[in-house]
Length: 473
Image (cartoon, rainbow, N blue to C red; front, side, top):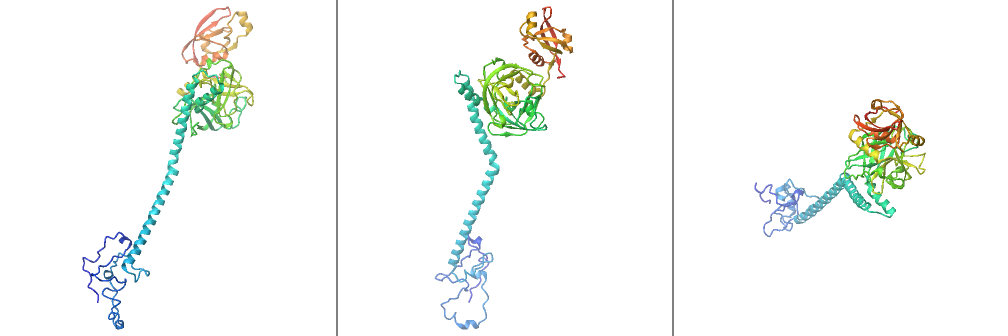
């Protein structure tokens, strides 16, 4: 005998069992004192009842299978597996609860594994640049502190040369850069007959402004298609921009976009004396920020580099090699007094040349502001004053002699062949290169004052209107 089916309020009723979503079996309610039955037995049967278990039951028509409502298993719940058939409801529930717990634990482990994998991917591909930038910033901070401390120490009178060199390097080293160039010109070319100056498109430069302006040699970046700049903190800045270049003084200005740059200050090359200590910093043969020291061997060296119009070099015995070009020459105050430019011969033989800061600083500002250098022109051919001529005419031991007037400024000013120019705008003229530099640096269209000595020993002042130089042959 089967009990009557549950009414509508009981059909479809689900207990708030948290594991019901996994198809857990809902228990039936039993009358008080009624024992749990193995699943699959219809309610109202009893295995111990001999009447109900009489073999005569086998002759009766097969009973209809129990409905889900009769067994307590609803359509949304999983059917019994063969392993669960015949087990008490409580044991089936316990087994399914254990399986559900195990599934939840497995799902939790998978979620943790996925989260760890996602975190790894985030760190590996997104945070690496941030971590790298933090490392660069730490390096820059350390270098800046060392540079500031070194410059403070350099203001004291140091008696230990080794200590001075160490402080100079700490002060200047962070502003020295390594320049790599991809050029249209043939590599390993010789420049103007004094040997290779850069090693396969490499050179040096010095940061002179925190905004990223760098001074180097023209021949380092000549014909460049791409310029990469490696900083002292390890960063490499690609595609530096050429601001301006001047072939006639072998100088060029490039610019990079980067934060935290450390710039070096200018010094006065005019205050240098022969015998003063100087330090060269650069990248010879690609060896970054190498330091060599020497003394000033001579000043105002000219006519040592073929094809270069304006020459007034500092000569030193600081060791310079290919790759040093464009690097700074500094005094023991850590100030830039020159830009390393050339060596005499195929390799270093104790003679290196640097463009003095007196010239380099002026060209740097002109290139930065205008991108080119317009030069003044006087329009004369000149010759040195020989000692014999100076003695015979009682001339001062300096000045240049007018050999020929070839341009309008000189002709209009009234210069004559044989005149000896001793001053330009109240500044003493020492030799031909000195006068060329002074005229070149004079503003075009301005009026300059010349002091001359005529052949009759007359001392005369002339006014000359400076014009722009257009030819350099």
